Length: 345
Image 1: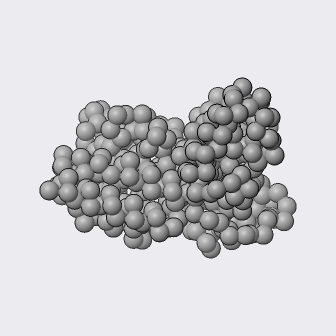
Image 2 (image 1 turned 90 degrees about the vertical axis):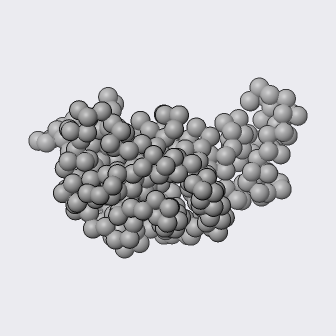
């Protein structure tokens, strides 16, 4: 029975992905499908940057007015703390799903996520998963319950049976088309405190943030907290994360620790459009292209001939053609020109 339900939900999620939904919309619909078989009181799912594990979107079950200080603490605990079952830990496990109650008692007792963030909101039980496919993580999600029954072994198995499908669907949603958007008039730079609180910014940053907050409330804050927490933990003092702006275009946030000033905990965060190389690499990963297919595609975008590609990549012209044929099938095009147009339109 559970296997049949899981297969039914997998088909439903696959159909949602084929309908052209963005990541947030896909996750909202998938939460509703999962809730029919695994009841929960609240849920929080996110798309993630497969290169950095930084969250690129957040989708809560219905409305969940989480206080801003909770989001700050969550980012700190998730990216720099010693929490049980962090998403970075889950993605490395053979089965990327776990209940918090399965963690060691000493870890549960000192869990910031459970004791300081969930319990004050009446939530006691958590089941979380990393959405992984082809060794890459495209999303993560947590389900929550109150004081009643914990998630059962069957429910853990059920969610585990969906993780690859959720990952594949999230990967497809990343490819959702973007609309043209006016670029910010000037550099988008903000100065933040040690926990990601905004302290100052350029005028371009103020207008860019206002547009984004109208289009997707809270999106910037979650990505910001993640990259700031990552920069605090990194030996280099720098971390990056990708997200979509108000026009649904991909941008990259880079947080860096400041080495001068009265407050050594301050960081500067810059927001810039993804370079062509980074954007194409992200989209090709979303199409399931291999590393070598990505290299060939970047050569195509640079205008290289087959002979030039073969020479630069140390492969034969026949292998170049094989990679191109595979790329055309994955991206759904029939020529080099269509491939470039599809990726850069």
